[in-house]
Image (cartoon, rainbow, N blue to C red):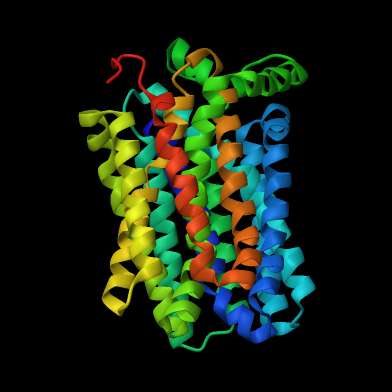
Length: 399
């Protein structure tokens, strides 16, 4: 079981590393290709559109190939996309080539992200401990490392290609090793077996139909609202926080990357500490507090008159957004009989917001300014806080 857990930790880490590597170089790619804010948003839509395809294919891939082969295939596609993005940014400068590379990154990571959350929920149930926040902390740790490497790449004047290509090799190599520890079949009891139903014997078409049926479950959809708001806050920060610091507050590109690093560091801390906090207070109070914290952080970041407050806002924003997605995954897995399908559905909602929302925010930012566009995130975090009761544990009474 520990090897299974550690494999999922590793996959979360390299997924975060891959995304942050791209996110940290957005200002350089924008400047190198001479793009405006709206054009950057359209480029990002390559990642978003590819991710939607990956999300929609995840249930089919999981049912058809099993977790091991599906995740490895996704990482191969994503790594190839990273190399293409690097080539289109510096070796053969082309916005269309970057768009195509981002589409491949999106397809690969979109599918992997859903499947590794299904695996994470299954491992959590099998081991019997709250692990999902820590798994997502590994993702955040990957983004911290990616952001720091991105800042170092600016200081070293490293081209985007020679930054992204080696990271792609690290991502793929880690995935090849990690997937070997993902079990083909559940090993610990009925709950583990039920939560790992996508690997169970039986016709894959029947398993796929079971995965699609959960979209009629109102509780799943409400948990999806929580995850939608929180992941929109996270995804928008990943794509736009550095640019908002540069364009809205006058930071340098390197300083903007550091602000992004502060944000993801705060998210990592929130997720590392989140398990004990959730066990102590329960999901609903923690989600409500997270929503409030994120809203305050966004307001401080948007309205900050000085450098220190920009960093403070990024910290609060990161802490507020840190637990929504992992708590949503755990809540979706509460019903052991249909855990894999429920987790897959909620993960798809979350990643849809994570990857489709930011391009729309970019188009809005071109019209009204990127800082003003961030107010949209506040509205969605309010909705996430209001939907928090849907995530209540079965063994906890209503407040």
